[in-house]
Structure formats: structure tokens, C-alpha cells
Image 1 (cartoon, helix red, strand yellow):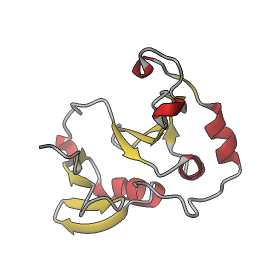
Image 2 (tube, rainbow, N blue to C red):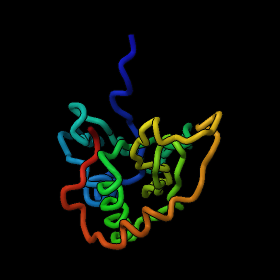
Image 3 (tube, helix red, strand yellow):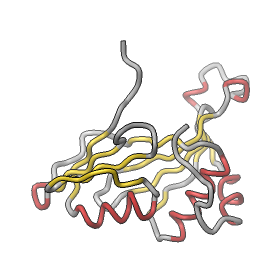
Image 4 (tube, rainbow, N blue to C red):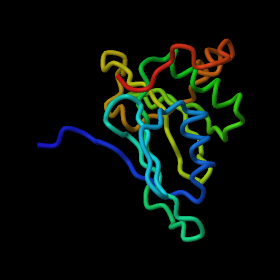
Length: 156
């Protein structure tokens, strides 16, 4: 029986540039490497992300995005503030009804979503909560008071 997603592996053009993004900006912890690869964790598994340097042979991505789970809304705001301060390319924060999130673009064009689940009791009267996305300005106001990750954590 499937239990969940264990890790994701991404092709990248430049391992050092991507390392600065995933470790330096998002705060993932480097846990291992081998020639042309680096491995990172958010604390969920032995590694949650693997980066594989392909250089000029960089393939076209075959997926829309992946999402990193964030502990709570305050942590999401702290991570948003850190990404904004680092000059990351951030897309509009969004309330997906079932999750509040923001998306950013990594150095290779992969879209990374960071989000916090919303308890089902707060989904509202929508017959299909997965079909409703609205703006999430609250994240911007929460992030305005944050300068760093502080105690923000990804994962559960």
C-alpha cells in the first residue's frame, strides 16, 4: 500500500546555483552528495529532494510543480519573507481553500509551491473545495513583520 511521496529528483543546469536556492533560500538541509548530485531533507525522510546536474543537456520539465509542506501559517509567512528578501521570483500567494500557499521559481524554472494545509472544518460551504482559488493577501501582511525564518519549519 502506498504511504506517500518519499522524495523528488530534479535535473538542474548548475548544482552550485541550485544549492544556494534550496539550501540558502528555502533552508533545506544538505545531507549527502556524490559527483553531479546533492541530496537535501526538510526533516521528513533520509532525503526529500535530490538535484542532478545535467548542464547543457537540461531536459524540458515534465511536471507542473511540486509542493513543500510547511508547518503552520506563521512559518509560511517567515519563509515567504526570507524568499522575498533573497530576491527569489515569487508568484502571487493563493488560498486554494484546502491549502494556503505561494509559488516561486527556482533557478532552472521549476515551480516550487510552499503551502500549509487548511483544516477541513475551514473549507467552507463549497461543493468542490478543490475548484476554488482566491487571492491570499493575509500572507503578505504576515510576512511584512518577518525578517528571517526564525523558528519556521517545513514538514510536520
